[in-house]
Each structure stands twice: as C-alpha cells, then as structure tokens.
Length: 383
Ligand SMILES: Cc1ncc(COP(=O)(O)O)c(C=O)c1O
Image (cartoon, rainbow, N blue to C red; front, side, top):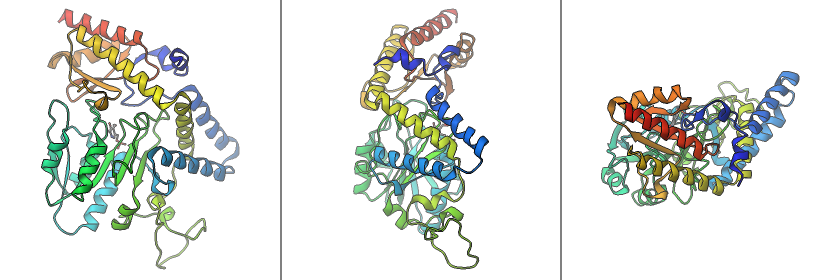
C-alpha cells in the first residue's frame, strides 16, 4: 500500500500536522471534486438534475445497507446525531406509558444523553473502569424497567471500542433495546447490525466519513418501526403511492413502512453524493488495509508515548478495543498548555474531558508522530 501517495490526496498535510480527525476528517481531493461538481451542476442547471442526484443518494443507501448487513429500506439520513436521539426520546415517551429508564455510559458524547434527559427520561450511567465499560458492569445496571441501552461503539474521548456483538447478545436475552452511536467508529471499523442485534444505529459522518457535515446515518430495524410509531412526520414521510407530493388536507394518511418515514423533508443531496464518493474512495484503498494502517500508526504512537513516559489514558492493550483515538494525560495544567503549545508547532490535537485527544488517520505518517512526541517531550522538560 502506498500510504505516501494517499497522503497526497489530503492537502491538509501541507498545512498542518493534523490529529483532529475525531472532530472532523478532512475531505480528500477526489471527494472534493465530486462535491464541487455536484454544486456546479446546481449552479449551471438548477434543479434539472434533481432525479439523477436522488438516484445517486439512493445508491448510497444501498451501499451503506450492504456495509451494515441490512436492507436499504432500513436506512435514512438525519441532520445529526442529536436530532436522531431526540427523535428516539420523543418516540419512547409517546409509545411507552409505563415507567422506564435508559442505561448509558458516563463518558458518552452529550448528543447521546441530552435529548433523553431533556425529555425527563430516567438515565442510569455506568461509570468507566480504567476508561473501559465492561459488559458485566453495563448489565448490572439493567433492571426490569430498562427500555434501552444507549452506547457509543467508540467512545469519543478515550477511543474505547465496545464489544457490541457480545453486548447486543446479552441485551437480546433480556429483551432490552440496543441503540448504538457508531460515529467514532464507522465506516473505518465495521458494524453488522444483525449480528450485533442492534435496534437503532446512528452515525454522524463528519467524523470518519471524509465528506464534511453530511448528516447522521439512521438505521432502524423493521421490528423497531413496527413497535415505535414515528413521533414526527413531514411531507416526505407520507406514503403517497408514488405520487411526488402529498396534497391531502384533513384526509387520513399513513407513513412509509420503511425508514423513509423519518426523512420528513428535503435534505442536502450534494454532500450525500460527496459521502458516496468518500465511501468509494475508502473502498478503493480497502477497509482491511485502512484498519491495518490505523493499528500500525497506533502501535507506533503507543511505543513513542511509553518511551517518552507520557501517560496513556485510552485502553490500548487489546486491538479489539482500540480505534483511531488515543488520549493522554500530562497532568492537569500541562494538558491545556500542551494543546496551545502544539498549535505553535502547527500540530493539531483536541482537548476533551481534561485530556489531550490524538486522533490519527490514513494520511498521517510516522514522521507526524515523531514531531508530536518531540514537541510533547520539549514541553515536559520545560515544565
Ligand atoms: C460519539 C459522537 N457522537 C456524535 C457527535 C456529534 O453529534 P451531532 O451529530 O449531534 O453533532 C460526536 C462529536 O461531535 C461524537 O463524538
């Protein structure tokens, strides 16, 4: 694999040493071309090519469905993860009339928790144990009133990757809904919604989707849709028997049986076309190759951090729990200082939960890591 050639697809590497992909991955040249082309057609032809664009995005749903091991009719795109979780919170409130709670993790990104708390749903949080969430600890929080477990596949701060297959099996036995936010994992790390018994999956693709702010993938199982009526609807939600626009007023209507019911209204086809190109781009490199590279870079980073005696907060001993995020702790005051000091060296990391988060990507190389470690060592020595 020629990783230096791939690095050239990302002009960000000329401008910065970029370890911020868990905030947002940059767009590679090939994907940018497709997005520019999609907007140029809008510029030159207005809406004339709307149908072709729609067909492209329907193809995207098919591709995503295959990757997630489901059917395209179970997938749609929502504006963001917060919206998706809000929709779930409303759905739970409207459809469940007996007391219930949701079990989630203490480390969750707030878009996984605020929507439920806002609707007054009882949340039970599992505390982290060395930045991990052992399945037995999650199951010990589940009680007879637990409606769902809501978890990230990969925790946004520590990069801990949950064993969602085993967790899904346990929840299935207890008849508890399984809601997974795959934002910090998918598509680089695969998810099989059937094998994992996932009822609802979300994935905000601006993190690892290489196409900017595109929205969140929203998977719902047919059983979920059968039991939980949609709490919201818009003109695109209505089953019109193939008529484009629903015009009825005060006439009973029903929503699509498929996940199309959640589209509600118009959405941005141009960036979705970009996301399709991004998936194709990644697929050309090969997802196995990508994961191999991420583990290789991760191994090197871990080795160098250990040599520099910098504390690694992320659980890194088991490849199955690793992702493309590694967080470090240089001590309370030094973590904040490190962020700004690194920026003076043109190295970009993130400050999350009082830690320094390093997220590496296919365009990073060993030299980037060396420069990072060099700067951190300098800072450590000076303080
Ligand atoms: C795990 C996780 N989920 C979701 C988001 C984003 O949420 P939203 O799509 O609501 O902006 C982030 C980061 O911004 C995240 O790290």
